[in-house]
Figure 1 (cartoon, rainbow, N blue to C red):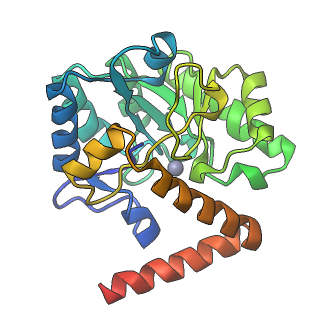
Figure 2 (figure 1 turned 120 degrees about the horizontal axis):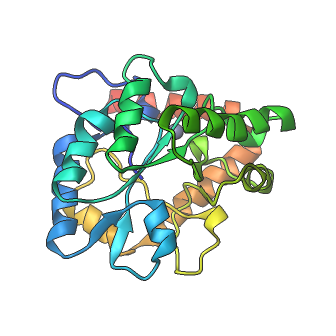
Length: 254
Ligand SMILES: [Zn+2]
């Protein structure tokens, strides 16, 4: 699971420390993709993985719909003929740093899988039913109108996943829902609760290799558990304020 890629001299889409941690430099991304290619693995989209789950490969996904999907990720992936799924937040399209409608169409025309990452990127576990429908089903329709292709995969903003979200996604015609839970997906995994591993800023090639090999997942799962317990305890908005405070303090102390 990737987000924005970092390019020299290009300001990021957002500036909070919690966001910056997820920006992987384009150079690091390129080395990671080349390593996969060199060991004979293939990068693929969620659609490809669901249709051939036994193939030797790794699903590559991007959340949010940053312009670097088109400027940087797509050329690196195209050079080695890897597929990927780009989950787009409809409300971000055309705003500073994010894809325009025509760039999104171009990404889709290049053969990449376009998924949906909601309408406004709000936490869906907090949304009332009518809003949830708009965020999941309404956003799907808009993306289909822009790309002229079916949009069948959804990823949850901020990793907030729950059975209500799955129910609305199923009814809207999605074939999968991706979470941000650090679990491996066996061939018969529930497609409406797919695990994903975040590649974070500064992740070394060795660290990336361990992620791809599924090593030390338990360490990441301890982190997942701590975060989800804290969110339950404080609620999403208080959790975000505390997290942002802690991250900016640690950035100052670095
Ligand atoms: Zn997101």
